[in-house]
Image (cartoon, rainbow, N blue to C red; front, side):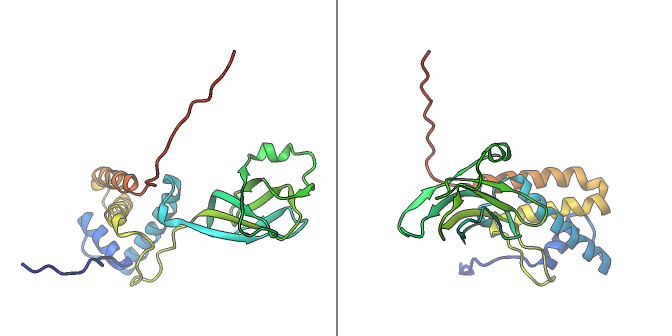
Length: 222
């Protein structure tokens, strides 16, 4: 028996909405219903950022620093900085680890204007765009290289596809069905929420790093 020979299955926004309505037992939808479902879809995608690190939204980015400038406004689509290094302008082949510190630790630095190669950073997560504070203040045009967790792109036109891997499509449709049921089919909300959480659990367990992880206990002496 012949097979399709393809593995490019995906859904556009309209098809995701259609599948979600069918799971709610609804088949007749007005223009407002579709608009409302797309709004719920965007709310759900924003909520996914609170559920952990979605690997497909992690990007390697760079920022060219300016001598004597302590703070920098990062891109507005950035959710968080996961890891970072500094590449000195004088040695482009060497990366220097930069440690993240808390707001209190940065506040307690007495001489924030001290210059040198930055070895610490504090990220202030604002409502519009994060602000990066470096210590010491850069003394050259070094490069701040970091892996950033970014926002999932919005659901655009109804014939657009979503910025979600194929393996998350079951979770995506289950989640939207749950969100739609809250407004349109409350009698199915409990069942759809359970299905959504199960689908999310399976997808998130698969979407994880595969590198080895070792824990070494610290030795203490009395």
